Length: 309
Image (tube, rainbow, N blue to C red; front, side, top):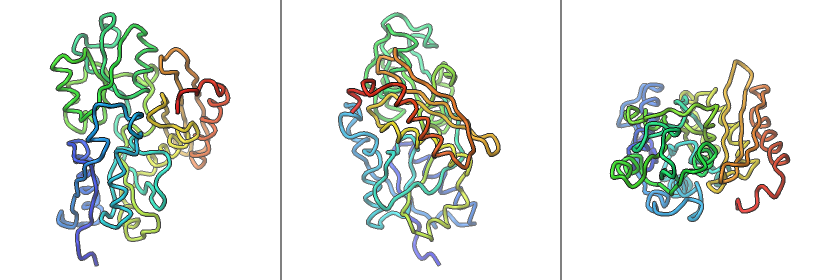
């Protein structure tokens, strides 16, 4: 019998807290447990504290998870809740992604101050985004646009936009919906023109390998279609050494026992693009993603990746 509350680790922003509570609520429902059976433990991460530099300059995606993973290792936390797109493709030894919740809308949202759509932005407009994928896709659509690093919590970025520091910004539509601010989006970007990031829209849970008690706790809330799709996307990312230094897009969907995948790599200026559409058996999701990444790497040639590291 559990004698003390399960310790759920999370970052402290409103979106991170929403995600942690979503996991807790699903576990309460799945196991008929009261709220006091869980304790949400908030930790500050280096990625949250340093917001004036690109992630590529300070260590990449792992900076949003490092402190949480240290507490998982020493047993202070039972599991941690993350945005899947923040997860490095190679996790610390002894840890793994043990559950995914059903995925939200994967598209990007454009929030325009100077104009409601990307097409209507004035020439040389300034767009704030810390994502190299979003920057490259923007420049592909509008080479005249200027882009500046724009990091921080969703609320911080929207405040900077309202203050006129930039003419527009982009956010994950899933996060806006979870925060109840989807009405602030002025354009929802369709995947055919603005392919999403691997993992976008999916909440995941990280825990210790071999911790049967936690595995059994989490198993009922794992959404297998999302899990399978994300295994494909993360394998694609891993095959390309994907990190915050790389403009990479990828999205997998399931249709019964078949998986469909679209992937793309771009030069930072968005003018050189290699893309792929492929499908296969859902049981081979990870292998399909890896093969797609390997194919694009071969098509692009080694010189394409110069400067990515």
